[in-house]
Image 1 (cartoon, rainbow, N blue to C red):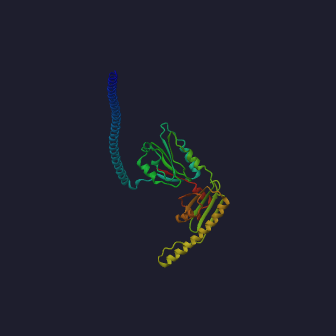
Image 2 (tube, rainbow, N blue to C red):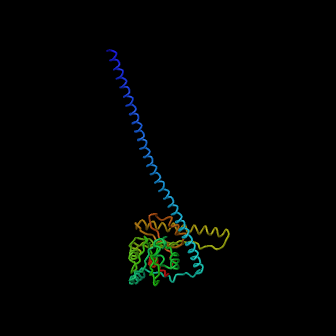
Image 3 (tube, rainbow, N blue to C red):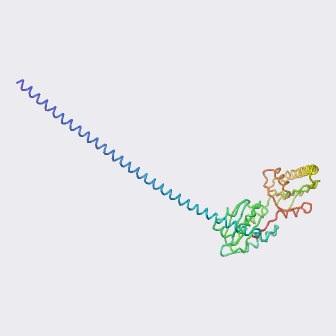
Length: 347
């Protein structure tokens, strides 16, 4: 009886052992399948990422090819423009050589304050339904090509532009032009044009110029010559309230050479230095009594003007007026009229 029970227990134990082995085998297979599935999923992710990278690379290659094409096209256009510029420059140079000294202003005149007002009144009477009247305001140092668009600039003839480029007055200029060349002239005002502007319409734009001419400012006029100079103060740019003529004994220029000339020139320079000291002593008193000053107009000998510019206060606006004013032959009223005059150039 005991042997039978023992045999049954052995059979049961063997059965359990075999079943456990089967379960273990099944579990291992599932783990392999899961691992394979995980690896396949990873492969799919990598393939997707690879495809994305390929797509990006293809886009970059396409952009690079387009950039190369764009660069080649730009270089081609640049070469064409360089050839065009070279051709136009050659044509311009040829035109200038052919014209030589023939390009001249049709006329130049000085306009007093009253005359410039009458001139602007006549200019304002012009009207054109075609809107082809051009006005350009050019401050000092500003070229026409820097203000006008290329299309508008092309309406002006080469001769007109060349003549206008000759003018570079310290106060700037105002250019009046109609596209049919009935009017082509420039006005140089006595005080600066402050900003560039252009107008193409049915009438000339004269208001800014009229405002410039009507500005009330406290001004000094300095006319400097060796031995005889002038200082004038005008509180409203209309009449001098203070006039000073400064005279000193200055030797005339020496034409002979050698030691005698060097000694003479040294003595002359000492005379001029004494005259300038006397001039600035008077000027300092006028500045002190009539401050503030808005503007100083300088005229006279170039070297003395440079000396005056060096010694004047830095906060003063200085305008150099190129006019031949002889102090000994001109009174204060005439000096003021001269420095406040405008210049008209017919192109």
